[in-house]
Length: 407
Image (tube, rainbow, N blue to C red):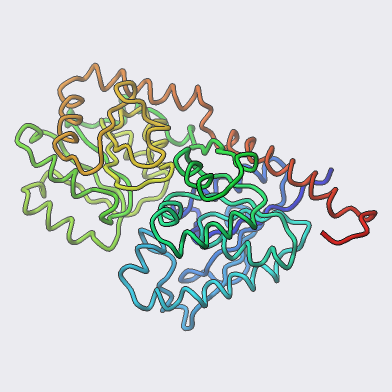
């Protein structure tokens, strides 16, 4: 059977080989293309990128939803659509036009022979609306905030229920998001939690040459927004018991200046390196210079940064938010604590800081868990291949020429 074209619908996608926005979606697209699937990505335009072009061999269509394009505020930036809407009236005003143009672009570019694969609720709404006309199957991945908003806010809950009814299959990124989806009416038979991978060749444990001195370093990677909890990590590291630790911060966001000011107030300026947004190879190299990885998030889906840290052979200190407990086993490859508990965070870091042997044992377990669970993009593509093959086979039967009646 000829493989169907997979059309990725997303509000975040790399605009170049050095861009890490939605890079995990690009990695899956590349892995599926290697398995023979034709791939198309539909996503919003970003500065300098509008129209049809190719990134890393993947055909991409970027649509503008506001003119001039320089005033687009809804998508892009650190924190995504929820953060942009929270801080900008213009971003909120652009939601309706963005959805309208998204639906139009999907209708223009796709047909019933494609399989639509939507990431995050915004793209899923566009995909569900377009699929009502094209009759294309729709697979949806809830990735974090979209699922939590559906649990907490009535309007998002109604929209999510509608998307669930219109979708062919759901592929949430964590067991917690699966639980949310089933409670909103998704039949377990049409839900799968695939493995979401990491580039275990790019992210690998450090060699002796990767470390230049004996300093003990804690690394954080993520958007500089409140929900990522970096403010808690700064407060924890200001404790005199942790005065010898250095902090590496990779990422940017709307709260960067506030967090830097907090670091100054806490006396951490000399111990903190603010590296901004780095390319994936630069992130990998920087993680190899760290000793501990920390993600103090208040909400998460299935954070790729933890998988990257694990593949890099680092012990992990993280909250129990979202899908993090699916990745980090407490007292096995790291420590888990309740989000917002700064004292617990400090204790976890202190335990690792004072024991080189514990860091080595936990770090080796992190890498081993990545390898044993096959947390690779090839394995992710394998899981999605099974989903897409089942859908394609049933879709061919439904739309076969001898079927006289319309579905």
